[in-house]
Image (cartoon, rainbow, N blue to C red):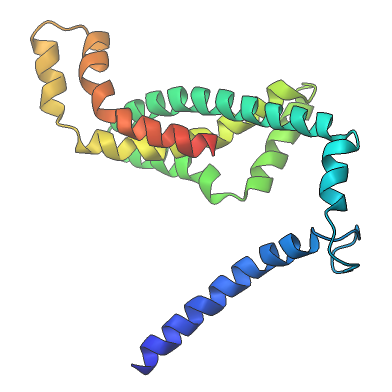
Length: 197
């Protein structure tokens, strides 16, 4: 009984530590002070100046750019990740393990390390930074997550159905389209959502 109380107390303490900064920022956003922690009274001046002070045009442009980058990166990484998952799945056991490990490295890295590494790569090749490099960086970052989402669906699939389709006269592309893609489609959708997020 005591361990149950302690574990629940520990859980509530962790949740409080995680969510209290968000709550504090929300509370202090309803004041006129621009410094967090300086309460000058209840006000919505910061929110009204955000939408009427000329900042709303750049804010709307930033939102549209964010959605465009997310949609492009999610679509491209879903296609690349699905193809990569099929390729990795068809490798020999030892090579498959090496490729799965290589696929896990970007997910284990901190996001900022991957971002800085890609930035330095683009700088070393003389590529100017902009919309295209941001999309390429996001595709690079999201593709391993799609591979991770598609791979369990491939492992669950019955391999005999694909081979039977080839034996019945289907080309490899037809067998891929009719047999494999319907099987991995839920994994592709979850990978797309994960990449978009």
